[in-house]
Image (cartoon, rainbow, N blue to C red; front, top):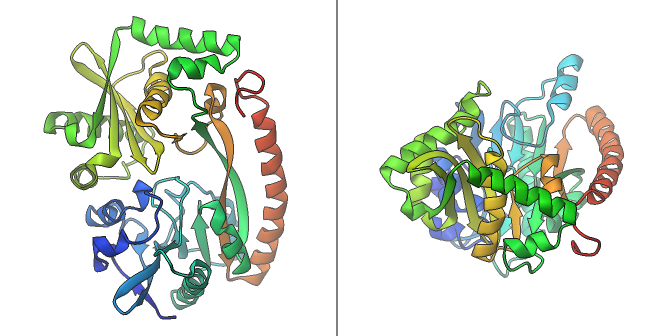
Length: 380
């Protein structure tokens, strides 16, 4: 089965890409991924060189793997810095490596996209074989598929990749109806704490606006980018995305963007950027002019839960990490990655380590479930 390597997603027509099964995940949208390249956020210069793999037949796109050649491990959210250090100490190069992922975005989803009616296992195996051949051709140390959907794990395991387990915290709508219905599922102590936390925010005079991407005008866009960039600059980092990326997303995907603006009077002082697609709300970026008591939790989590309920979303994914989400009703959910290493010695050592790590990850998820704030039986 012939597989072609692309140096840019622009080589594939938008309509052809959208014919692949993506479960309406907005981060696998052609406009999102191609926008990363067009804006310069993703390029060889930033350490994310596109080398996407596609399977075509008679001019029809049958399958694809968003793939990047990388010379660092930043922006992945599946941490392999210890592996890179072990390679360095052994005098073996770890970079470059091949990574199938959504750059800078820790969201689970398909990493092998297939058209309806296509034998997913057959074309998936062809894409993995092609990725391994590309790794050899580019002298890459390894191949990594980050945060693939769980139903693709058997295919990845059958191809000889080692599986790594981690955990995120997701909120699920159990038929609550509204935020009061959600509070009713909590223990009395937690319900009282949530109400007190929200009351503190509103007593400071905050009000909130919910906007779609189409409702962001030029003045608000300036504020939004300032908020977004501030969360990076405070940590001494450059923002992942330049203004051109966000301008492109708002122009090409306005229906997938939701923004919560926190105002004091008429002034916007904080914002959280969300995406929506496939019945899922995704919380991504937050920024604020200065620190206000409880405003982060209100804007990113409580407003997010209300937004998910209003949008009819069955799940709310607020991003990677953060055990503080557990106490606010976000369930621990296993997430996965798959890894192949060319060096046999390191491959054996890391595979054995991953087996032990998976046992710890299982135990962690089970222990975390015991700390959910719901009344007995209410979280089922």
